[in-house]
Image 1 (cartoon, rainbow over the protein chains, first blue to last red):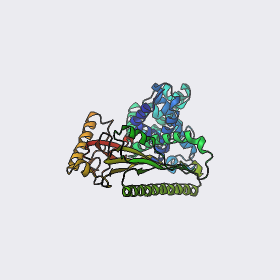
Image 2 (image 1 turned 90 degrees about the vertical axis):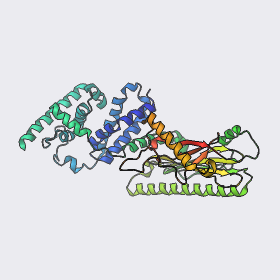
Image 3 (image 1 turned 45 degrees about the vertical axis):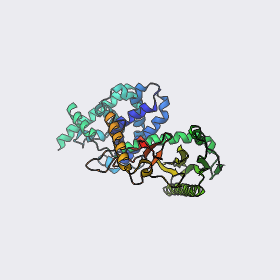
Image 4 (image 1 turned 30 degrees about the vertical axis):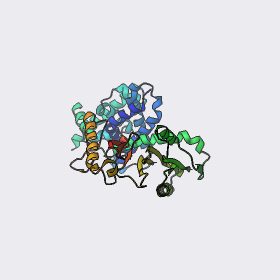
Length: 163
Length: 290
């Protein structure tokens, strides 16, 4: 069983990464801090369920990603900023073509695709680890990543051509 | 494609991080601890919907004192610190526990009257303030259309600890810990000269050079600890933007106590010279002259 001390050390050392991921969902600094705090509180309460401390990272990211997605689900009013350029499409194939900058394009992907891309390319995680974080089969993660890359690539090219 | 991701990753990693992130993280641990404590007490509390004040004991020799007594060799006219009042106030918006000390057996009734009245006034003011805050939180929640029962209550805990007790001097501390969004402990020290009935000063216990003595001892300890392991001892340090951060010498009303070995110990509340996660910081600065 993992100790609170080990958990606290892990959290303290990686807090900035948690914040960045939380912000990628909330797009709001205070809300991101709330998501991080809620995830840590849940983590402490569920720490006894983590049998093998070696899985602390994927285990905690799973809590954090859930908190982030819950935040988006629970949000009644969608911020204008986030959806301004594609007001109608919150679906998986949300059009991200307007963003020439790849980082912005990633941040505008539908949340589940965004999660996979951020964890894979910004946090350098293995696809198997991402699958255990999101709780999806590996094949789903792969297809999401494929879809995201296609969207990003196509959109980037179109974006470049449009300007 | 991959090169693009490298650039995007750099943008991602250079995201602005709010300065209060470490505090938010610390608070998470405090919140979880408080919640766990609440959960543990929950069955006993569930019946207490209305305000319920329990006067558990009016005058009750504390176990702390009993332990301290065992270590004091002279059992003559030794001052006692007793639990004068012990009570709890529990509603869905506040959870207050108080262990109020009083002193007795000093052979100086004037001193006892002064100190006991002072403690009573201080504690009453602290409790009143916390209850006001809880009331305000509740009203704010109702105004926002929230269910006040969902709010985390204001948690206030007042307790005391005897630092040392001899024929000449009595040293004890009252802790006030308030947990709302975060927990925060403050200390009120009493160092009493039993012969004169006055409060001891650092000058009384360390001599006229007390400031130099205490400053040097504290600074040396901080420097040594930070040199050994800066991650374990993350004391605040002055920066160009905040030149008065960290330890800047002892205060005029520096908190201190005398420990049971007769050492003078200066004490800093949470956040005074380091992040709240470091807790209260104590430094032995020398032997007491009293």
